[in-house]
Length: 179
Ligand code: IMP
Ligand code: MG
Image (cartoon, rainbow, N blue to C red; front, side):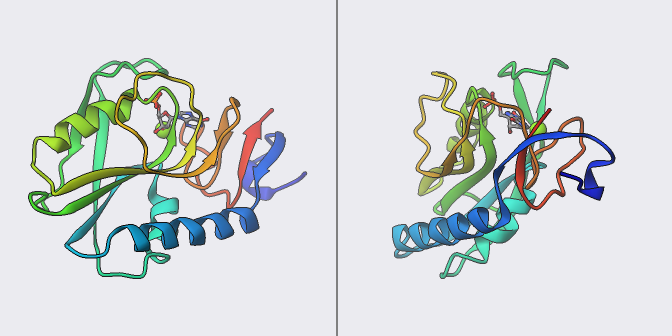
């Protein structure tokens, strides 16, 4: 497969193509619409990885909502999650009394989310749920259940649709594994 976006890198395979992604996002949007009958809904995207998914997802939700973002920064510099995470951008929006839907690109060990959920819970939202596009179901770290899942993901390193490898490939319109 030759995609000029790849700059010569080889893909192993396309895991979810554009059509499959679009169908699933529509389905998730409908699930979310049906799950929040009343009250203020704040959709919080965890940057950077969720930006493509979030843009598609909010347009598939047929009810009023607000959008804001959170940016997590690890204290460590390792490649794997250390769990010591702080908010590098903290939403100005009030969370108190609102239904908050935290949107993530992919959950692997769940450590990142576990920490963010703790930080956000302290702001007394009316409810706090998680929506992730992909779930690797790798870790037992996530005591907090993920309410909305796009797809279960294979245990391969995935790129595209917001997911990066060293900040590359976020703009692929499909999800693929690298060679
Ligand atoms: P966790 O804390 O182990 O759940 O890690 C989740 C974070 O690691 C995600 O938000 C992604 O930024 C990154 N990540 C995990 N798996 C992948 C992958 O296959 N491709 C790209 N990024 C990934
Ligand atoms: Mg990342």
